[in-house]
Length: 388
Image (cartoon, rainbow, N blue to C red; front, side, top):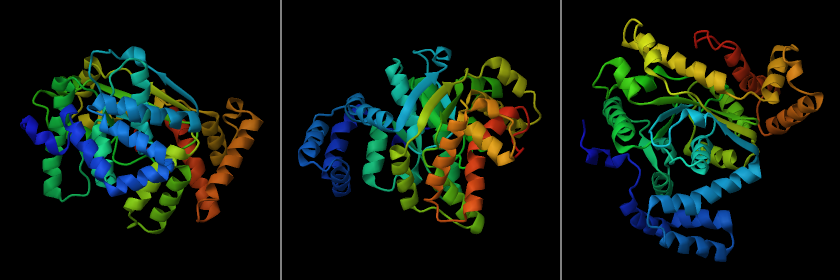
């Protein structure tokens, strides 16, 4: 196992490092422009800068800045925020939350606000290096208990990085006593299909020095579902899918990710629900371990996590309306009212006006994005490669 110091390039900042990072942020000209754009009022900006100078540790940073900021986001863009399944968790135990991924910032941020309110310690958060396009973003993320998952690096470096990441996650959960949030696959779901990548589980297994069952059992994996009544960046996702259809070599820019971060925070999200599944226990892992080879077991474990995410996803009237519209049927007409249907159609036209692409194709992708969670729930016992 690597020495703890080997984790320095990816781990969150420690309490003793916070004052130095605060000073670096206060001297950062890009960060200064961000503050001016967000708050405008000079007295408010000075108030924030003064508070930063008094911030000496991670907890203070989260309580002073992150929790109030996210509570403002919740009050301004979320009509109802709920959480379920906390009875499955013990407050003095560490977990690895493997979650579906719909919004770059909010999925893990909302998780931490809600568990903090309920007396649980906030989690460490996996964040892709591709999002850390400015030093101030990396600093704010790592103070906020994020660790770095390196992206877009050469194959040899990727192998080394995967080893280090696997060791870090296992060390954090089993030795450091901290919980971790990580997305079930690289990148957000853009078509509504929440599918766990076996490659993620393969990475986690790199640091396993035990047999399959014991190695995954000690990670205390908890499948987690986050459900948005209104997709935070729905029109941006549709636009990206259309571009990929037209050009298989299409690549997002750093600006695209930054715009998605901002849109996700600002756009209306309706009702949002976080549901924790039950920790994957020894009995389930023993059953999975009977599969053929290690790749078969990892694939089966991914399917097991998928089923938990599908069945714990809170479906809204919008999902049922989209399903009936997409399939041109009335299968779920008893799940919504005519007023709810009218509101969803109005939302659809409003958001798709922002997509400068073919309206018919955009409409199909939009409806599919909302309809897929219903399909996944209906067919959660089918192999994940089944498509809508």
